[in-house]
Length: 146
Image (cartoon, rainbow, N blue to C red; front, side):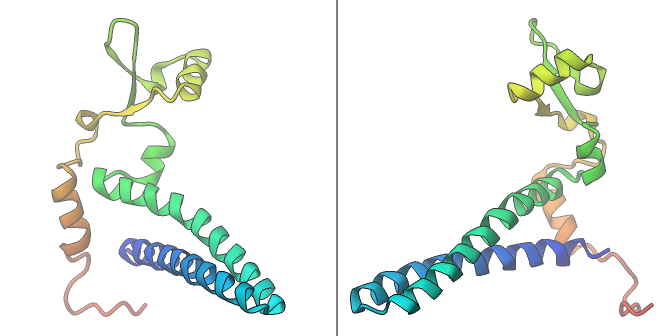
C-alpha cells in the first residue's frame, strides 16, 4: 500500500540528484575561476555522487511511471504477460509463446510492445493515473498503524 510514497520518493531522489548536478556544475566553474582547487575537488566529488544518484533513480522512476500509466504490476511486467511481438505477417504473438531463439531475437532487437487489450485492468493512462493518485486505499478511520 506504499506505492504512492515509493513513486514520490523516487521523484524526490531524482530531483535532488538533478538539482545537485546543476548547482555543483555552476559552483565548480565558479570555484575553478577563483583558484579554489580543494573546494573544486570536493564539488566534483559531490557532482559525481549526484550524477550516480540520477542515473540510478531515473530508470526506476520511468519504469514505475509506466506501471502506473498501464495499471500493470512489476510482476506482470517481469513475466511479459501483456507484451507481444509482430511476426512476418504483422500478426501479434504473445511473447511467452515464442521459443527461446525467437524470444532472444525479439528482445535483442527491441521488438516487444505492450498490448493494452491483454491487460483487463488498463483503463487508459489518464484514468489509471487518476485512480493511482486519488482513490483511497483504506478506510478513513485507518491511520496506518499496525
